[in-house]
Image 1 (tube, rainbow, N blue to C red):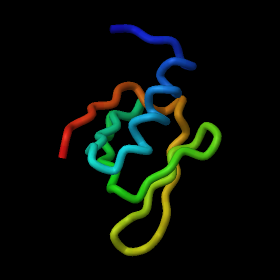
Image 2 (image 1 turned 90 degrees about the vertical axis):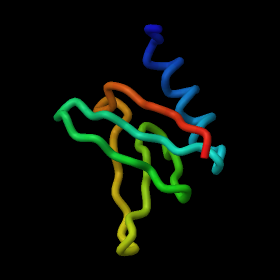
Image 3 (image 1 turned 120 degrees about the horizontal axis):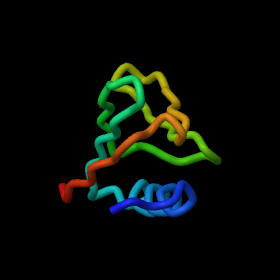
Image 4 (image 1 turned 30 degrees about the vertical axis):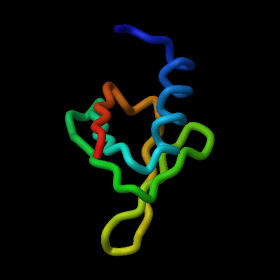
Length: 71
């Protein structure tokens, strides 16, 4: 199902707020990023906390696809 960029961002914002859902993002560069439970969306940036305590950010435009799994 194709969605517009705004629709994708709304859906992503909704699912990021649910802590019981695992999220895997597929990026334009071919990499895959699994988000942990402590994540947030600030503007157009997905902020994720890494296991070493550092934070990392991914711009929504870099995301090609997202998979959502019930944990």
